[in-house]
Length: 615
Ligand code: F6R
Image (cartoon, rainbow, N blue to C red):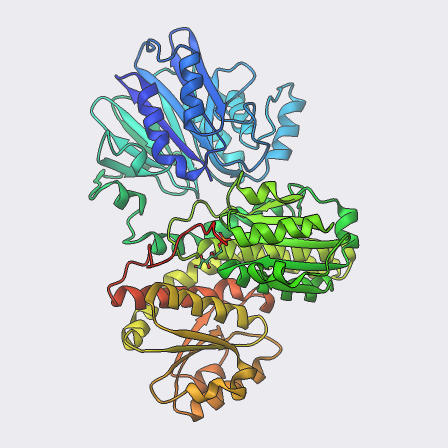
């Protein structure tokens, strides 16, 4: 996830671009860069680090300078590294060999390796390790005076999910943008126009905007904008006025960050898995600095984490044990280090922490390292402390999460654990090739299934929440892979609604918790498809016999769960081990609506903080 902005108009571009980047910095701050078309050609400045570094570099370069004829044209980028290390060479904007084409990109070009080989064979030279650079070379290959046409031809060859903005020395006063999945919006001014990843980037300049939809290409000049579909068919789109303040714009039309982030979950999964599954036959974890030899020989795995991240680890445990047949222990990070853990060489300790700054998780990781274990951090934040307290890092690519209750980072962590589990299984030969291919295909299909679930169940969960939002207690029950989903659903509900919840392994219920049940208790059961669904159904019968109100999450097509529940929410079918990625969605929505119906601020629940740096 990165932030991009472009400007074309009658004012010097630099200050507008840098001010726009400030509003996009939450999307990444590994490096930043600006390129402007000036009378002498392109003036480009890039710097590793946040915007303060870029500002320093601009000043050192003696910018701002005079504008070019035909208007001021410029593009800028703030990077969240995916392909290629955090270096100046890998910072955007990227260029072709001549430097005449300059581009910025947000997202991932999946077929970059093939394209790069093809372009290099034509004699083009690359100067970065990024996937993005192929876009500049492709545009250069096709440019014969018309930038829009060149972008259109390049777009036809690119696979992945990305948005780009391009400019060319021979086309001053022109910017061309294209969108495939990742967001792109145009700001319409007077004698000037803007293009960016998000509205706040240009909101100080204009409140008139045009959304660029998936598969569209847009050409901006100071005088106007032209939108077409990728095949050139013209698109008519009336500009809209943005209402509200910048925070409202950052929420992208949602009332809260939590709801926005719930909707961003398909993208979070796509970003986390797709370029690590570039082919259909396995997982590529070459961005994670652990050798295949080490992974193949791991004798034990210990997962340490807190809160929601701990629940993601629980899902990962089931996947690793089932697919890779390696024993996995789970520990709450704040407990791990006080039990003098027996740990050492040959053990792999996985610390899961979205912020990368949770004090207890960091302390557990450090202790494991001191004792000779190899530590892998799974985190969402580049350069966070966890990346320094570990031997290797696997980044979730959920984008910055602002809501305090973790949603999209949870599913991204779960997806990351599946990647680890599958890679281990491949290396150890514990799954045959056909099974690996099937699971890879199932995982690639997950983002669409999540989107369908969020779209179809949002209203439904609001209705269910309306019936239960004034309850004094909710019980969550599930077994095996459904248990961490329940633990996470219960945590979500209690932290945003302040209603007491408990989550239990359904088989444990008769050993105590069943005493809690009466006719007013809502019991949320995760009863998705699994080899032990029969057992879950028996437990649900026991609950129903006590008169409790059963709300069940089931797999679509199942006709047994509805017989033992008042409400059944059917989620799409996938491999049963992957089911948590879709099963958690209704529970997040339930927590959200119950809290909102109680008039609470879901983005900032009381007493909580997004980053817990105290032990
Ligand atoms: C709950 C939540 C917390 C965090 C926990 C660990 O919604 O967000 O339980 O999961 O504080 O945080 P990280 O993952 O940053 O280590």
